[in-house]
Structures are given as C-alpha cells and as structure tokens.
Amino acid sequence: MQNIGAYGVELQDRFDSLDAVDLATGETFTLDAARCGFGYRDSVFKHASGLGLAGKAVITAVRFALPKAWRPELGYLDLQRRTADTGIARPDARQVFEWVCAIRRAKLPDPRVLGNAGSFFKNPTVTPEQCADIIARDPNVVHYPMPDGSVKLAAGWLIDACGWKGKSVGNAAVYEKQALVLVNRGGAEHPATGGEVMTLARAIQTSVYERFGILLQPEPVVV
Ligand SMILES: Cc1cc2nc3c(=O)[nH]c(=O)nc-3n(C[C@H](O)[C@H](O)[C@H](O)COP(=O)(O)OP(=O)(O)OC[C@H]3O[C@@H](n4cnc5c(N)ncnc54)[C@H](O)[C@@H]3O)c2cc1C
Image (cartoon, rainbow, N blue to C red; front, side):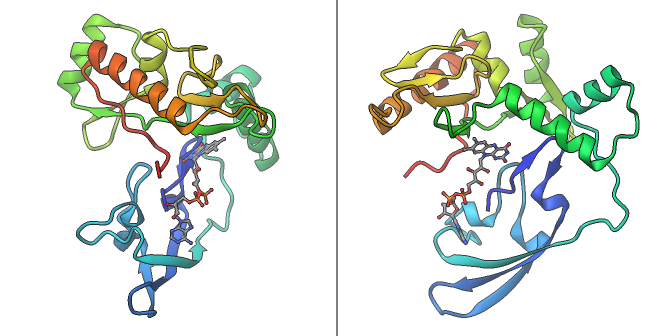
C-alpha cells in the first residue's frame, strides 16, 4: 500500500490491478493502477480523507504484469557504478540480483541482527529554485531532477550533513553507515522505546529544518 520502490523500480511499474473488500459494505471491488493513485511511497491506501481508502478497505489480491522478455533496469546510480566498475554492460538476472544484495548489505543493517525500520524519512522534493539555493550553500548536496521538473533530495545526505550519523537518544540511534536508517541499539533485552525513536526523529527534523529549511516527513506509519 506504500508503492514500495528500490534500485530503480517501484511497485507501480509492474502493477496490474488489485482486489479489495470495502469494510463498510463487505463488497469486493477491483482497482487498476490509475485508481490506486500511486506516488512516491504513496497510494490511496495511505490517505483517509477524500477518495482515500486508509482503514476503509482490505486488499485481498494483487496482480502483477511482468515483461515476457527480461531486461535489466540499470537506472539506479549504484547499479550504473557496478556496470562501470565490472565492465559487465549486459548483466543477467542473477548478476543484478547479486549486485542489489551487495548494495543493500552495504547500506542497510540486517534486521535479524540490528532491529530497524528501514528508511525512516522520505526523500523530500523541492523546486529547482530551492535546490539551487541549497547547492549555493552546500555544493555536494545529493539531488535528482524529476520528470515533473521538481528535484528530489537525498534525505540521508541532509541528515548526515547535520552530523547525525551514529548519534543516539537512549537506545534509538542513527545507523552509522546510512543516516536515513534509525536502529534499535538495545536489542531484545533493552529495546528502544517509541518515545526515544520519536524524540530522535523530531530532533533530526528540527536540525534539518534549521539548516536547510526542509521539513522531513517520516516514512513508517506511526501508531
Ligand atoms: C529493513 C527495512 C528495509 C526497507 N527498505 C525499503 C525499501 O528499500 N523501499 C521501500 O519502499 N520500503 C522499504 N521499507 C519499508 C517497507 O516497504 C514497509 O515496511 C513495508 O511495505 C510495510 O509492509 P508490511 O506488510 O510489513 O507492514 P504492515 O505494518 O503490516 O502494514 C503497513 C500498513 O499497511 C496496512 N495494511 C497491511 N495489510 C493491508 C491490506 N491487506 N490491505 C490494506 N491495508 C493493509 C496496515 O494497516 C498498515 O497501515 C523497508 C523496511 C524495513 C524494515
């Protein structure tokens, strides 16, 4: 329901349709991609107001449409680097799988070893003018021009620039290899509390806002 995406592909790129049950009427209905309202980490299932379906429907089936002739998606920067570094310009599916696993292992902690909620903040989108303003102050800011003319900034880079890598509040901490990931340093014995995670998240939001004027939005659903 959050249009997951990674390494150059989002769920919506392979999605055909879904079946769901309306919790008020018990009726089954089908939605195609257009009616799911997919966006970056977003769909109608994440919103309760208007046409939103959060809490109003349960998805019971999802149909995917895969291209019959497999071809690699190599648009993601780290995958482009792998093709350049290895000289393998036409990798097969196994090769792409191994590259993705290696990239993931390098950036994300294994949840079986170190509890975490994945990327804690969404990558913010700004206008080209806002981006130019930030580049004037921080020429190294990681940014990606989007097809609609806006610019996506790497939230992890913004957090790292504010000096958060490795910092903690109680047992909630910023992962030292990737500032976008909040981890539980207390293990199962002394797990980080929800309060510690949210205090840390708010402190990160405040410092990124004060330095860059951007309010980061959490990606996990906070209950
Ligand atoms: C280590 C780690 C790495 C991650 N990496 C990525 C990444 O690279 N890219 C990315 O996009 N995301 C990433 N994520 C986030 C991940 O996509 C979400 O955690 C995941 O999609 C949530 O799905 P779930 O079924 O586990 O969650 P749940 O907590 O079960 O569900 C999430 C929400 O969906 C609702 N829901 C669940 N089932 C249904 C249903 N059948 N019908 C309607 N609503 C339903 C729930 O009510 C809840 O609001 C990562 C998370 C972790 C922990």
